[in-house]
Image (cartoon, rainbow, N blue to C red; front, top):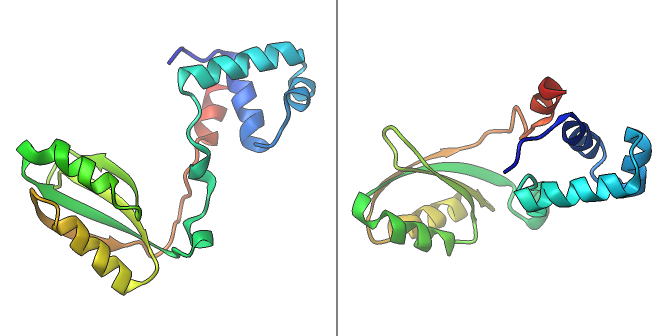
Length: 154
């Protein structure tokens, strides 16, 4: 990924404020030409600066109102295959390799407690998974955000 300059940062701030902005609207807002905005957007996209649109979809709208975090302890030599197996479970929306006690931290969405129990059992059934520890999210207190970091750069 290339290093962002001040114009890139302002462009990202404007998009964060209004993600549906057109190139023309962004150009007007920032005092740039439409071609400049279009070229910078292309460069940002090519550099991997933008995440997938599905991060903006609320799982509750799809019928998955509950979120849980599952710490997964695995046999290290099987980690690569375990990650492949976990990626096949649709309710797993995110997973991170971790340092510390747990090997993986998996974020899942579910319909209810019984569904969470089923998902946890599916994870435990993966060859090489030794155990899990599950925590139900009671509510999101700070939603995913990057605007404060953009503001710091600007």
